[in-house]
Length: 377
Image 1 (cartoon, rainbow, N blue to C red):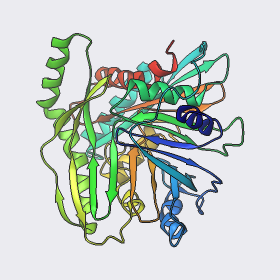
Image 2: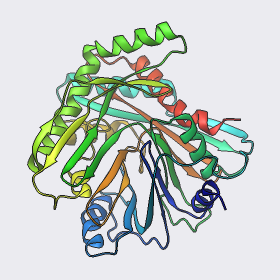
Image 3: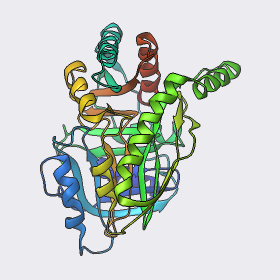
């Protein structure tokens, strides 16, 4: 059996997959949930569960956007190989027929939510708030998680493709989180920590000259640079108790096939190598890139205005080994899969100066990452 076929069968069998440019993790074997019902409890107990465990055991999976909700971190044997996921995973891709699509809320309703958030910003309740929406697709047959992952890897080579069973993977109606995240929450190797938060975005254009004009406009946009600064400042503040040095240079441009982003490559050195990757996830998540600023006020606005359960969308997905090393991405450019239903998520950061119609367009562009992979022929 070839490596792609073996990986494809592992995914069909419920394996967790985490595939980036530099390495791929496939977690197989018996995979009980990490003790603890909520995401924050699972994070806090992960290091204890791995303490003294045999080499090769890895905690992997997803924690939700709202850490008080149930998480999906599991313990199992993990194989880490260099490079991205080998393709094709299994055979040839079958045809997908979408019977129904429904935006939730409709574009006009999302624009109204943005206006409500702007009113809260102008009243001084909050400085930035991230609002999300979904596109629900109903197919005639069940969606294939391996096919979706394969398409996402092939179309987004610079992103981290992921497939995480949110429910019991033995259940044929289990929910899965699939996606191709461009945003590294953190990578911890010994005392070294790397983070690359994204905030501030603009849809790309198929016309090269217009595409570069948009990239230049993003780099010089006061609104987007303020939105980005909220994230960087919050990340640095959260890291400070754990690190002896933190370096956060000026933002740079990062391109995905659908969107330009502002990104900052933050590097840090830990005070104590006893601080694990999940310790840092617990301290950082949710960043203002997916929540807002100040955190508590932004989460209150999201709860009151957004009107949906994000689940593991905008949560953290990744893994940690017995040494405390690990890699985690922000669960964006993601969808929840359950049988014939695919819920594609996207969000936008709202700050003073945001335009409701522009935010509708931005979220639509972000949805293209999963949508194009889902309906590919």
